[in-house]
Image (cartoon, rainbow, N blue to C red; front, top):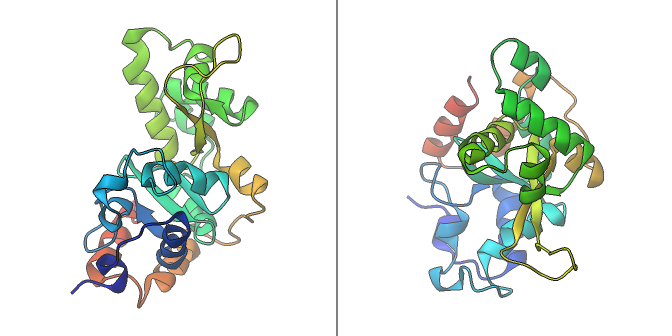
Length: 229
């Protein structure tokens, strides 16, 4: 049986914001069993239109407006997490070890360390600049670069800040818009979102209690497994 969210069609940014606030976690595309996604809740013809009703545009507005954290947080897939749920999600799904410590223990890549150090110093840096500063502009380094960014999002070290217009040396718009990144901690501080005060187990319990009566049982069971690493 589908819930109310799965049966409705969302056509405005405000409506999608209300869905994210209610459900807490909403993937961009189908990911969680019996759980809505932005793609499933919207009209296909509205995507990539560059208009107010374009869900592809919304995904970058939510983190910019401080309404939801955005990134490849679950199984390397893009997810929106509401500002209310985000602190608990970071505590539950993020790593408790600093990245440098994880690297020393063989649990993180050298490229991830390099990129995180740059992002810490240049919050909101866009993809192209990040590749240049990380010395990963060469074509053969693109895969390592992309994998490192996905790794950092999966451990909640970084989030996608939004999307910036690319400009040339003269300041003119040049090419496709580019994704920008900042640390999860910086995003939370910038949007006056407090850290979760409690243990990882308490964060998991907090999330599961919020899902009760709102999420479908299959969805809760699935996310419970994701959080049981």
